[in-house]
Amino acid sequence: MSWCHRLTLTEEALLEIEFWHSEISSFNGQHIWPRPSAVRVVYSDASSTGYGGYVVEHGNLIANGQWSPDDADKSSTWRELRAVRLVLDSFQDKLRNERVRWFSDNQNVVRIVQCGSRQPYLQSEALSIFSTCLRNNIRIEPEWIPRDENELADYFSRIVDYDDYRLHPAVFQWLDSVWGPHTVDRFANPTNAQIERFNSRFWTPGTDAVDAFTCSWAEDNNWWFPPVYLIPRVIRYAQSLGARGTLIAPQWLSSPFWPLIFPNGVDPAEFVVGYLVLPSSKELILPGYLGASLFKGPPNTPVLAIRLEFQ
Image 1 (cartoon, rainbow, N blue to C red):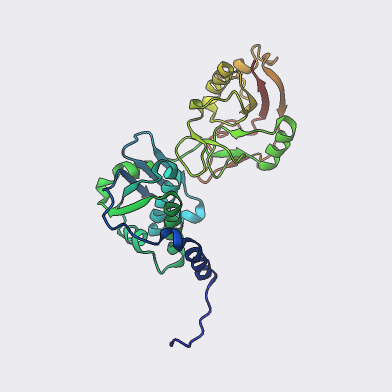
Image 2 (cartoon, rainbow, N blue to C red; image 1 turned 90 degrees about the horizontal axis):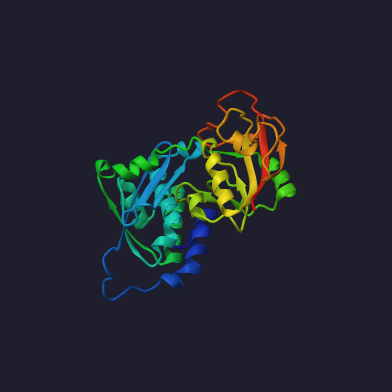
């Protein structure tokens, strides 16, 4: 109302003031001559189920993740803006010290990334994007494109992980006290990882590596809770590396992996140093955001924790 008017600042406003107070010195100043044109090109998109994005110069750099039920209910602009944030967080090490041309099919996102927003929930995302760029010396040049020119990112955003599940954390902690401490969760994402260090299928914030089968397992105490169809490959790969770890698997006697663990159907193989039948409970396996497909077969299937140690 006037320069003398008292104004009560919100917590969000105070946090942003504190951000600028601590960061403005590192951002202050502009180059006299224009910097070189963009050397990286990134596309991102969001759907009703998740987000996706990729770096053009690196065909294998694909980011993907699922929305929580609360996130899925938010506005399309928020989801598109969060997609930019999450794809950026996934690739920040790859884009460090780069100038990036960023394509989105949402015009509001382009404007908000450039200028911010008066809506607190959108401004929070914009500030996080800016902060990540500031820490990594990344300069984003957002640009709008029509939806039909963003088909690949749209495709990645619609990928659904039906094997998104995890063991109940209390059961994991118990097993970790028996056969741990485990050092890496080989098949996980940010929402279901039991350990801070994890491998994921696609690039995602916090991942230690993409595709667990490209990593060496020999020096770690591994936690393996893979999709069922990957269990034979996990056993063969661990054997080739002389690895050790704990494998979670359903007690499916007719499955292809069962003879690998119990050669005669009853007695365990020599590399099995122990196994436990986990307590049956509806909460033993916790599904991810979109539901897990692991136990849509016979009801009340027993679940085993199997300790594998290869020489």
